[in-house]
Amino acid sequence: MEYLATIGLEIHAELATRTKMFCRSLNDPDEKRPNVNICPVCMGHPGTLPVINKEAVKHVLRVGTALGSQIADFSEFDRKNYFYPDIPKGYQISQYKYPLVSRGSLNGVAITRVHLEEDTARSTHDNTGKSLIDFNRAGLPLMELVTEPVIKSAEEAVAFARELRLLFRYLKASLANLEKGEMRVEANVSVAPANSKLGIKVEIKNLNSFKAVESAIQYEIKRQTEVLKSGGVIIQETRGWNENISQTFSQRSKEEANDYRYFPEPDLPKLKISEVEEFRNLASTLPELPWQKRERLLTNYD
Image (cartoon, rainbow, N blue to C red; front, side, top):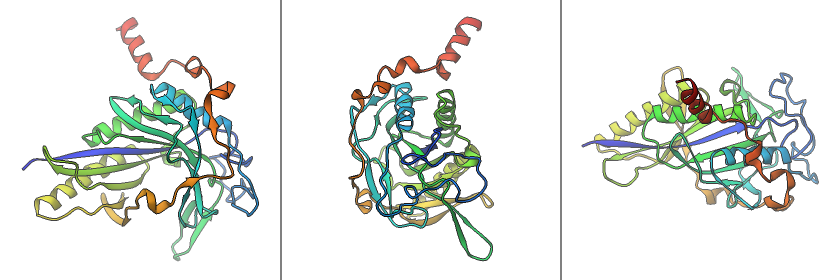
């Protein structure tokens, strides 16, 4: 029996703004000292109020325009509730029902949505078993792009991610350095018999190089295929990638949207995109895009 893979990607990119998403703390990816670019807002102190970073919204809208997407006229932010040490408020401000950007395509891959949220803090774990948290990254503007589950191979997934990084850099929306965590790739992989419905989805988290993306997807396709051929069952879960042994490993069962208890963020206004002068005629602000440049060079210079 032939087994086929189906892959969808979730790609996060930290946006190149001067300040964080909802406060005036600096967005400085090169800061080495821990916990210096912080303030009561991004640390989640009681009584503080967030303010939307207009430049971050504009970056997402320009990316959506370049992708040929539908730009929302109405959008809003939501609270995504979960407890983890790297989110000081006990919830993350994200977008759920009304993202800024819907549909579009890149490299022949259909896109579901592009939305805006705040990044989490950075956790490190030392040899004594202690965990340390640096909140410099907490609250940085983070773009999340979700593709449709239409990718069929690891090579196709990498080609899409490379083209997206190139677009981010052309638009100056993000530096998108994977080795610095400015762009992170997560892959949803399912394997099923040919001509059958989609299999059970497994999510591989936080892939930080194109090599890791390709290797992790290839391994997961092989693992799931072997499980199915032996009569086993795939469990819906989140898995990590161990670079040292080139294998994915189980982390936790996969959450559903209702586990996060999304509801509209009460401390932020709703967005009416067409009413903001800077958000109009964004197509005229775009540079020559990568695929346009390739076409011009081929046409003019063979």
